[in-house]
Image (cartoon, rainbow, N blue to C red; front, side, top):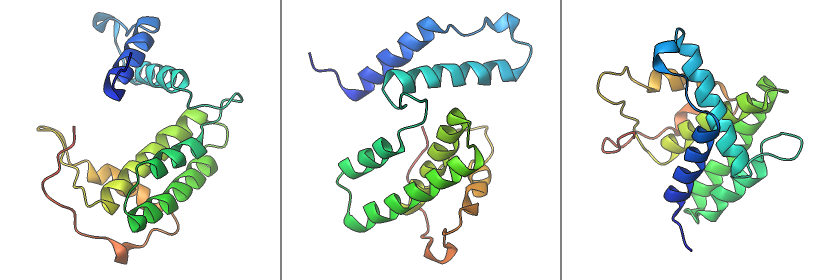
Length: 159
């Protein structure tokens, strides 16, 4: 039976939530409890989908293959692949033994660069502060060139 990717992800996340139920809201005394639970569910989903090697490290090579499988414009793919290596290097350098933290930094870094390369402006949901201020910290990557920055399109919304 064919199941679309969105449905597959929903099934994986539901399985991980069933295995790791969220804390009861009335017992939550610290927002960190929610963050910790989110990390547990995310880790479960990544493991279920085969994103970790047997030694627990993230499959950065698989992430690069996923990028290449998108059949992007050659220049866009080249730029994103360059950023992939920079984000991977930065994540491994900052968190040599923290595999989950590596994944989190790598994914945030790639989200930032993909949005920039593809000229997507991230618009926060109503009532939240501008997300780009939080992402500016990712500009510390060594070969990021400010003079190559393109102005973002105004019509993309963050989901």
